[in-house]
Amino acid sequence: MRQGKKNFRHESLQDRESIQAILKAITQGIAKGKLTLSDEDDEMIMQPDGLLQLRVSAAQDAERHRINLRIAWQVEGEKRKKSKTLKVKLK
Image 1 (tube, helix red, strand yellow):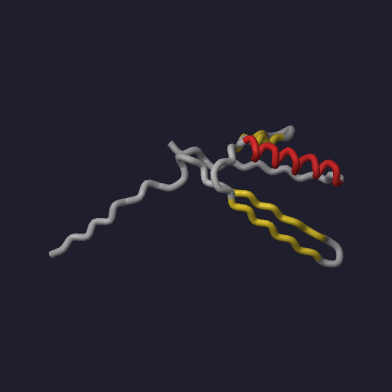
Image 2 (spheres, rainbow, N blue to C red):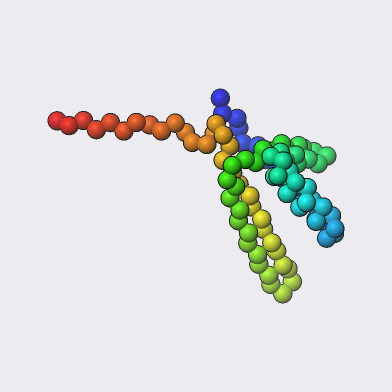
């Protein structure tokens, strides 16, 4: 049975040292193969494994600079739907 989509989102203002600590915790979790994200409202446990896709993008304008990091991976067992067999009949 396939589980439904789960989401975790947290947004807050942090200083540089706090951001550095969060990024360090994320890298340590990736290294260990287990990430736990939580706040007062929710918790999500993820298990990164195998090849991970990394996307980094950045933008800046006069008033705001932004860096986006995205890390994604396939979960074993949900990797691919079972391939259907193609059958071709000759007449």
